[in-house]
Length: 213
Ligand SMILES: C[S@@+](CC[C@H](N)C(=O)[O-])C[C@H]1O[C@@H](n2cnc3c(N)ncnc32)[C@H](O)[C@@H]1O
Image (cartoon, rainbow, N blue to C red; front, side):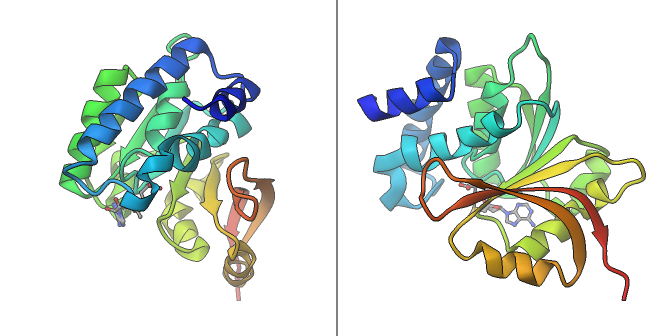
């Protein structure tokens, strides 16, 4: 691992045990990525910074939530990384929703081999609330625009008494997506600067409601 990455991981106060699990995940990922398209091949060389560190910042932002739902988990970002961060002692669980069967098979192996705290749901996101009735936090990266993401999250976030918060990785055009989403939804928004890409953010959304016309 490069010295700059080790420094970044130290800065995020990631334990030695978690780093070992992340290293095991990274080597599994590189092996499976030879036969399945888990991320854009051009980003594989920079797996640690572009994908692992990018995912890791999410859990560091919010270590509180216990039950997570990761939508469109793909190769495990950020869901598997979050599941690796959840220690057995503190409890918690990550539900990985991924409809692609090959990716779902990889996710199962990744959870099992790293001993991460989560399970795989090889179903469409639209069907997930029936299978996962409640959660504390939802995450999604590279899945859809903010309005679509909020539609996906609505069954959990709009439920009576729900305190579910959502975290979305977004690129430099995020403000346009926020402007579009506020025409349909009201929400509290915190923008966290990305530790990986200067123009990117993690949007944290709470107290979602639909606008009435
Ligand atoms: C671009 S990939 C991003 C994967 C991962 N979150 C990442 O950042 O690397 C989007 C993933 O979402 C899955 N996906 C898209 N729409 C979905 C849906 N409606 N239900 C379940 N999975 C979906 C796709 O199969 C794909 O693996």
